Length: 288
Length: 276
Image 1 (tube, rainbow over the protein chains, first blue to last red):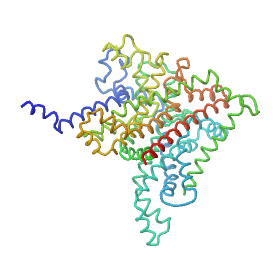
Image 2: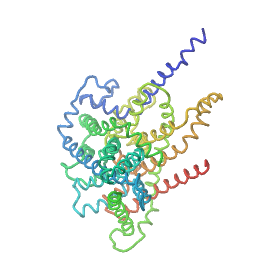
Image 3: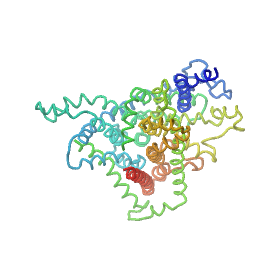
């Protein structure tokens, strides 16, 4: 009897439920800071500064802080700017890194290893160090405030990673498929367009999602280069809007709403692609 | 086919690097070759910032590993929703720094922040903490914010490595009667060693050279106590308009990261040689 009463504690079903609960608690603790801005943003503006702990959670869904943040700042416009820049960065880095990755993975040519090493190791260069010369160069060329310049800059840190993720992906495509193409008399170009490209779609999506998130969340270059209010990216716009304002109840509540709005695109894309991203991360990080 | 990628990176990475080296030899207000900027690296303006950056890099990584290893072991158990929990744990990676700063400034608000309110309510705190404004704990608060931002990457690296540990090894240890901690000490930890080192160096170098989070949280304050090298470089460049000093700081950041990465690769290579 005694054994039986302990027995269920050791049953696989109980263990599994127990770990599920522990996992849930751990997950909630880890994402608490983000969860908290989401909850706070839904509280409305009244009593935002309250010493009562019971007021900390939203009593009812109140979107006033979103209305104020979206209405008083140019958040919508900044979000559109960021969307344009992140999409541009994604397309540029995919179109540059896909051929590079394929060549590194499949073709044998002089300088292949050196090229690969240069590509990947450039990822280690801290952006704050590049900030100086890039700022000098682009202001001299009067390319500050130019989205094209910002897209190029963002590409410098997305290309190494997308190349790495994609070359790993190409390694996983069986070479037989291309060889069958060559045997049927296709040229390298035809093989690339007709066979490799359609097969690469999952890899391109994952690498693209990664590039998009990196560009979307980037602050330093966008902050240094873009000086006109209309042209800000979303993170820089939010920063500019809230710097130097008195942290009143309403302003703090709006900051929470704005933080959620700025996070939403990258978080949603991450949520959708995380399965691929995580495995890309892994191959990139663990094998490197 | 590699050429466009390499060209683009050369243009945008190597040329600027050359410019930095060139600028580092020019003293402000002079056109002559000089080592004054390098001599300045010994000054009391530079050294505390270097120390702060090291504290942020090393401190945040210590927290990340102390959290990530047990977290990865937990998430490696059989459970429902494991994929979902794991996805949500890695989600902070995609949160823009501006929102990370917003979250921490609100959580740690000296008057209305939930950390203070809960701390006071359960009697952990006698009076509210100023967190980012309090000279005693501002740097520590900055370290924690960096740790939160860096946790997903460290977690994912450790978790992946854990998944490659054959289950038979743990089973064998269990059959031999090894208690939980011995399994951890003799089976799990040795297996994770390399990936922990990798995660530590990658994340540490990243946090060491990260500009935006400190800039958005404290701007280097109070009284310069959270001023790290990236923040100092920014101030030299855009406030003092001293490109030469900024260039020297940039190179210090870069070479510190290179030293850490090289040490890592040597360690990994030695480890592999030992196994082979």
